Length: 345
Image (cartoon, rainbow, N blue to C red; front, side, top):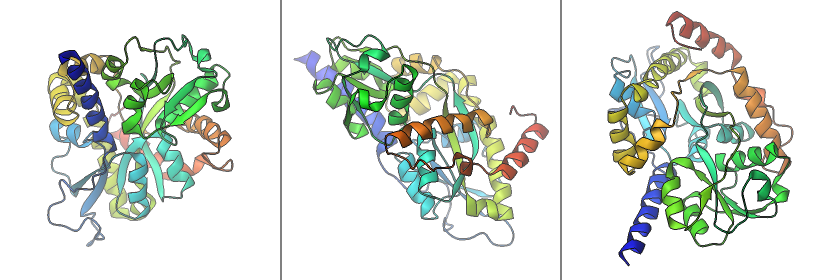
């Protein structure tokens, strides 16, 4: 009985950790008494309104000191996920914000008034696929005909389509089971599906709930964290300069976690995501350093591939122009600023 309670608690912690990424919160954490929606005055960007998820940007910028002495205030706003942040961009409530590469495509399709200004390539995939015992799934090709749970229209969906495509399969070759992200672990442990697409860092808790379940070997895929900026912000010279300055600070700060692993694991994984410190350290140590740079051609190519896969299953319009995601003039400016600051591009 005690063993069952322990396993249940592990699943609750995994769901709680993921809920930190899925529960909507639009609470300003650093904007002082200023109105975050108020326009800049006097030719200066008084406040930069930043969309964050589980303080993933705020913590390294704060802990590293990269956010000190900014000529503008930092107004932090935490969101559940990219789609909720896209809604805030569309409503004119944000100047910059970060999300995974898949939601950027949906922001483009929805004409959310944003462009990608910086990217961080994740060379180790943050998502993965778990199979249940007795499912007969030993490789990606074995997913054919199986019930696969994921959350439609999210990065989990894009990841699955890319993995299926790598072995010549499409979504039509599996039985898709669309489940809210917070319910994916329970769906998998219930036996209602043969496999689940999930976030790798919570994998230990998920497999602990399903005896004999295991991770399927998947293909390395290019994945990106993307910093977006509102087109309206870039159209204002003062805000444009603030966005450029912020990206430089973010690039410096993004190197901090790997340089200070103990403090980062405690502050982010343990205190913010409520994860087990041992499992968190194992996961973090598996990750290479990932730094923000100006938008790259590789990112645009990756978006084109993913856009086609999502269009083929009716999630995106076939006419979507991925080039609309990038402000080429700003990318040129930012690249020059990175070079002048001796930062990698």
